Every structure is written in structure tokens, then in C-alpha cells.
Image (cartoon, rainbow, N blue to C red; front, side, top):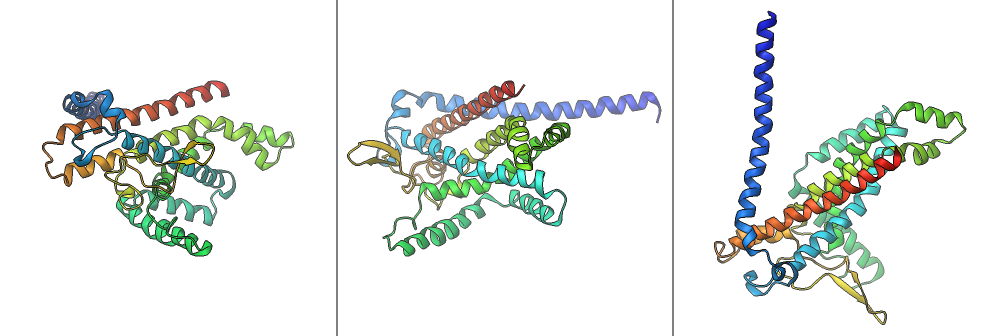
Length: 309
């Protein structure tokens, strides 16, 4: 192929790739414009801070906002230790052995499982097996063996585990081998090298995994359909400690969630057209909330990256 034809082909495929990239951006802008144009009119302080009323055509969505934030944070708390520990084992200890290959294949398969399957697994394992097993062991009434925030968060944690493991593994592999060798030369043990050298250098990459998992988990509906979410629950999943009168989050209570709220209003409302502005307003709040959670994680990542430098 001549140099002129090669340049033509390179220019053509570069233009195609650039056009596809702009198409993605245009689709995102179109969705955002549609949501903002139809939902901004219902956003007001009452909509954000009040509890819903019967029929969900009046009042606000504050319990859904509170439940979304709580379950997202609880999901991160449950998923980060497991995901980071698994990535450390695969990178620093397992290497290329047979057991490590089995774990990596399992992670890849887990990433391809549909989200509704996670929801059914959450009901069968966490609610019916683990929860009711705890109730039977301790002779409790139906306390742990029912849908609750902790089981919904555990199901979402399983959903985002592949994202955290893969991103953390990439961050650990990006740490130069020379840093490990220098630490070993000074007499450090394997765990001391991982804890004091590798993890501080990979902290920003680990937070990248947390950011991606927030984006994935905050908008999921199927995994929480049967594991703890409720449509109309005009109270917060909060327990007040007796005598101290200190409110704390009750992980054994059901909760409202923004994506599930949108799903029910769009599919099972008696008058879906009348609630469409509320649907768009709730969608706008969910997008903004996900953006704020991601922004917080990005700020932490930038801080730790500057600190490591």
C-alpha cells in the first residue's frame, strides 16, 4: 500500500473513531437535556426535604434520597475490604498459579451475571439462608430473616466486586517493581512491603474502583427489588438509642431508593402520565446525587495522589 493510500485510510478511520466518540457525548448530552428540561420544574425544597404522601403525587422524596445515600455507603463499606483483599492476593501472592487463574476466571464470569440474578441470589442466600439461619440459632423472631438494608447492600457489594477487584489489581500492578525490591533489600517482610509501599502508591487507583462501583451500584434496581427496598415508606430507616436519644441508621429496616422509586412510578402507577414530572425530577436528583458521590471520591483520589507524590 502506498503512503498516500495509507494516509487516506488513517484519516478515514480516525474520523470514524472521532465521530463515534462525539456520538456518545451527544447521546449523553441529549439524555441530560431531556431529564433537566422535564424534571427541573418540580425540584424545590419541599420536594427534596419532605416525606412522600399517599399516592406519591404530593410531598417529597427525602426518604428515597436518604436510603440511596445509606445503601451506597454501606455497599462501599462491604465491598472495598473484600475487593481490595482479593486484588492483593491475586497480585502479590497468587501470581500465575492454577488457583489464581480460577479466581480470575470466576471474577470475569461474575462481571457478566445479569443484575436480576444477583437479586434472586440475595433473597435466597442472604435473606432466607443467612438471615433466617441467624434467627433460628439465637431463637429470635423474624428479625434478620426478612428484607433489610444490610442484605440489599450485601447484594450490591457482590455486584460491584469485579469492578473493584480489576481496578485495584491494575493499580497494584502499576507500582514499580523497583520499590518492592528496595523494600525487600531493607529487610521488610512481604506484608510490610504491601502495607507500607504498595498500598500507599496504589491508593488513587483503589479510589478509582470505588468511584466506578458507586456509579454502578447507585443506579441499580434489580438487585434490591426483593432484598429490602420499599416503594412507599414515609419514614427513615433510623433507630433511636434508648435513653441516649441518638438516632443511628438501622441496617435491619427496609428503605426507599431513588431508582426503585422511578421504576415503580413509571410501571405500576395508576396514572403514569400524571407522575411523569415527578419521575423526571427523581431521575434528575439521582443523577445529581451520583455525581456528588463520584465527585467526593474524585476529590479524595486527587488528595491521596498529591500526598503520595
